Image (cartoon, rainbow, N blue to C red; front, side, top):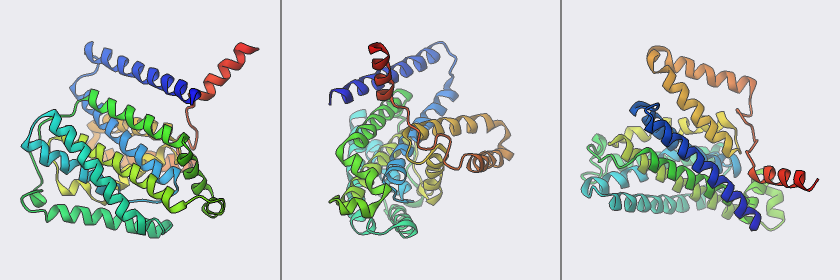
Length: 318
């Protein structure tokens, strides 16, 4: 407990340092409005990737339904935020969206998480499509296929950074908890985990619900960032884009998910001027990483401040 507190404080100090560096770069004009928008999108992608990595990388469940949960958060923020353009309403909508996503994930997870591999992927993809079709046929509430426009710009880079910090620290603490260790045990060998008394279905559902709620938060932030929500933005391709970030960074690595979101975000920014061949270069970069680093950029490696703390302590004792 005491060690976890020290590690959390170290992480918090590191993240505060990052916040200070970005603030200085913005105040000196080194980062302009375009760069800030890229930072916001990278931050939203980090939240999405960390949540999906918990489901795919740490619990070993192949889910393609992330876009559906993202849509719930986005539409909750859009519907409430457009009618009551206050930060209180926006955060209330974000909380409501996260709770609805968690409830949907729970209801869906109980039957589907008994499935494995491709069957689970197809089931979660079906759920995401059901959510999207429900939104398209939502009538005046969701404005159908036309979506909701004119959402106030609630999201700024400070807000995105705050939720990146909260999501990352919450996920790391979850993985260090007894439930988190059970999640890793289920990923490594589900039969062995079940034989020692772990309720594997329960563990998988908890990870699935956690990941769904983080996706909903990211969806709310993106709605406040873009200023509009349209059903086509939450299709199967959106889930694949998040999955690419996770695989590119390394399945089972929170550090990898963060680094991957940053690297791919910067690549997209650099290739803005060559829009005609941007996707070709982007795809080629992904293919090369998969050939030479099939485990992703960082594999399962994790930046561990606790190991660094222990190493420093040993050196002091010697």
